Each structure stands twice: as structure tokens, then as C-alpha cells.
Length: 506
Ligand code: ATP
Ligand code: MG
Image: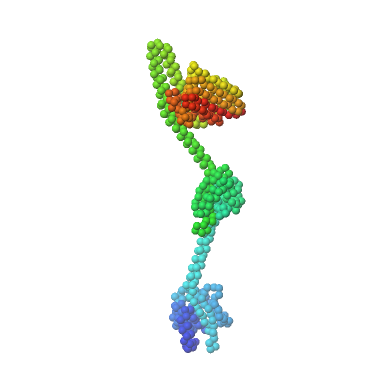
């Protein structure tokens, strides 16, 4: 075939030559008869090298043989078609490089001769892009797979953590304050299935008083705040931390996370620690008060004892037995005072440390009173009486030791701070023992009355009378140990009445 046969239509030639697709025309025998510029560019051959050569020169070796066959079949049943449907086609460059191509075939008969026209496109770039896209997709898919796997793992991990969250509950609430998630050891322990809680209101477990407060706190979390508060539920104390979890918009929260911690144990330990700290403080206060009291109150009797002893020595030499005896008495009295001071201090620290137990037994209260009076005889002196008005039961269930200390203290005060008769009234029933001790002595100044039961407290008008200010403090502690009442009425220079009431349990 001659080029000029086409040559007379210049526009066609132009299209033929300028087409970016390679155009190639073969005859029935597969001999290349015509190629355009693009073919030479795609395959790297000069036109002259191709013309009259078999088309198979442009095919990779492995396709050459089958192509001859294909070409033969095509010439038998020619049609317009895309070549290599469903499979990749390759071309062979002059330099031996194999590359992907796309081919569409057509046929024509010119002056009785059969020709095949092939339109060829080098699709290396497209193929590469396809491969790149494919690889990218595969990579993405792998990443998605990994992420999903991780997410699933995380979910399992989270729910495992939540389920085993010790001493508490982790839950998520929606805007209606209904549970959308709830897990935790506390739930497991209490036998509540987390499924049971879903769609139930978080507020259900609160009583009316707490509900409003909790609601307000949660509302703050829905406004984006982090909130912490203590809650009382089912006789336990919980510490709740609330944080916004899921945001609908930048400022609107749709779900909040609550982490509840049962802190009952910690709180009670805290409380116990506070108490023991307080006790410690009180004890050390007592100790320092005792030291300052002792340095004052011990010095006087000790120096009295010392001077009495040296006087005894002197009177011994002089043979004055009368004076000797009176100083022996002084020594004894002061030693008794010292002992009672030490005893009082010991009693107080034993009360403080809760070491005293109430020992109830049947006690004849009248006899006990007589015993106490006999022991305070030294204080009474000669010219006055202790008058007892007794009414009611004599035998009552009481703690004998405690009653003795109480009565001795109150009675010794009445005798110490007055020089007139003392009246003791006792009214005893099976339910209650009521005792009053009245004197007509120096009385208690009004300013002193509020502090009267304080440890070491002494009123100013009692300064010249021996005492440590511990007696009534001990009485007060003992009476409250017996769940009784201790009150008094007093006017300075008129007199004082102490009232004691003790419930009797049978
Ligand atoms: P002690 O430890 O030896 O008993 P005290 O008598 O001073 O010393 P409390 O019995 O505790 O201590 O009494 C405290 C203070 O209350 C007394 O110092 C005194 O001022 C005042 N008081 C107590 N009883 C009477 C009373 N019957 N009349 C007047 N004042 C009293
Ligand atoms: Mg006293």
C-alpha cells in the first residue's frame, strides 16, 4: 500500500500524524504497512525499521506465537473491538523493555485488500497509577483493619478495666441522666447487672434531699466542667468525679462519664485518725497542764514536808513530843495531798484513754455515803454537821468505785469551801438516783461558773484553799460515763448546791 493513497486528504494525514495514540496498519499477513509518529515514539523504532516488518516485532516473546494464531482468526472474522478483553496486554520496545498497552482494532478493505488498523496507547503511567492506587487502597485497608482490631482490643480492655474497677462504679450518662454504660466491682459485688441499669435514671439511687444537689452537679458537667463531690448511698460514702465525655458541638455535651469510688473505709479511717490525733493532742495538753500544775502544787507540800522533817529533828532533840506529833501530822497530810493529786491525774488520763469500764453491782448507797463521810472526816472539823436526808431505795445497781470518787469529791468541796453544816439529800428510786450536796460557803463567782468543770480550773475566791482543780472534772467525766447529769446552783458568799442524777438500769 502506498502512503499517497491517503495523502490526498491532508486533514486525515494531519490527524493521523498528530494523534497521541499510536496508529498502525497491517495487512492480512501481519506486515506493518503504516505507522504514525506516536508509534515510533512509543516503541523507539524508526518508521523504516517497522514498515514491512511483521507486527510480532512489537510483541514480547511469550505472546508472539499465539498472536500469529489470533491474527489469523481475526482476519477470518474481523470486527471492531478492544483487544485482550479482561487481560493485560504488553508491548515490546526496541530496547527490550516490556510495557502495558491498550489496543483497539478495526479493519478495512482498500481496493480489495484486507487491512487491520490498530490504535495503541502506552498505559504505563495509567497502570502505574492504578498499581499505586491499588497499593494505597490495600495499605489503607490494612490500616483500617489494624485500627478496628486495636479499637476492639481497646474496647475489650476498657470494659475489662471497668468491670474490675475496684471499690467503685464507672458509668456514662446521657442528657436525660440515664445510664448508657455502667460497670465496676461495686456493681458485681452488689449483684446488679449492668444491663439492668441501662436506660434507668442515675438519680434513682438517691433520696429526695440529695437528688437536687446531685442534679445540679451533673448539670455543671454537661456545661463542660469537671466536677467532684461526695455522695451517700446505701450507708456508704462515695467520691464521684464527673467529666464531660462526648461533645455534640464545641460547647454542648451529650454524655458524661462518672467515676464513683467507695471511700467509706478511707473516711472511717480518716475519722479514727482524727479522733486519735485529737486524743493525742488532749493527752499532751493534759501532760503539759500537769507539769505546770505539778511544779506549782507539788512544791508547796514538798517544802512543807521538808521543813516539818527538819523541825521534827529539832523537837526530837528538845524532847518536845507535842510539837513533834503535830509536824508528823503535817507531813502525813501533805503526803496524802500529793498522793490524791497523783491519783486524780492518773484517773483523768485513764478516762481520756477510755480505759475505765463501768462495773455495775448492787450497792447500798446509804452505807457508801457513810463510808465516804467517814473518810472526809478530817475536813469537817468539830463544830458542824453533815446532815443526810435519805428517801427511797437503799440497794441500787451502781458502780461502787465511781460513786465513791464522785461523792468524795463533791462532799470534800462542800466541806472545803464552807465552814457551816452541809446537807446531803438522796432520793433513790428503781429508775434514778438523785443526790444533792448543799453548803453555805464562799460560793462560786459568776465568771467562774462556766469554766467550773474545766480541768485545773479554780475560782479566784478559792485561791487560799488547797486544791488542784481536778475534782469536778473527774466527777463530770464519771457522771457522763454513767449517762447521768451534773449541775449546780451557786451564789458567791451565799453557798453552793451540786445536783447529781444517775439513771439506774436493772
Ligand atoms: P481538787 O482537785 O482537790 O478537788 P478543787 O477543789 O480546787 O481541787 P474542783 O473540785 O474541781 O477542784 O473544783 C473546782 C473549783 O470549783 C474549785 O477550785 C472552786 O473554785 C470551785 N468550787 C467547787 N466546789 C465548790 C463549792 N462547794 N463552793 C465553792 N466553790 C467551789
Ligand atoms: Mg475539789
